[in-house]
Image 1 (cartoon, rainbow, N blue to C red):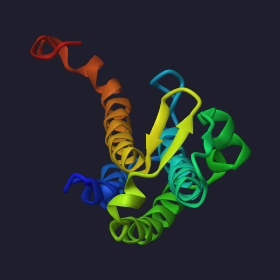
Image 2: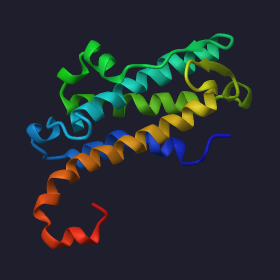
Image 3: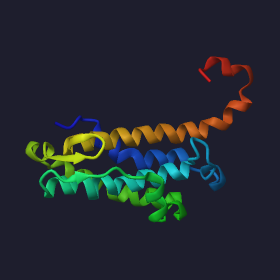
Length: 167
């Protein structure tokens, strides 16, 4: 059974990012912070993983018997697909269009389909249900990462109020 928040999370990620990033200059969105990643990297990665989870992993598990699923190199994939050269707003618009269609397709899967299994090279056996839950968790993790990247430059101007936080 899919947790009731999963599809809300998946369907709202693009709009949440769009709202969060509204009116930010491209230089701020493109400035690397967290382990060399910028907000642009985060958005590109979310868009890339959308294709990995839905197009590759879930479809393969539904169509094949226990397919072998390889881990990805996120940065290499983003570079290969040219995602780091794409405009953030353009990527978010594409995601906002694509996600409701993906969620609609997933919402009609049977319990038997949700229980179908693939073999991941690092995680071991994974089901369609596992991937759907991981996808929503992954979105939230990267929303938090984007917020942290935007938050980081503010610390220098906080003065003694930094003591209110675990910095």
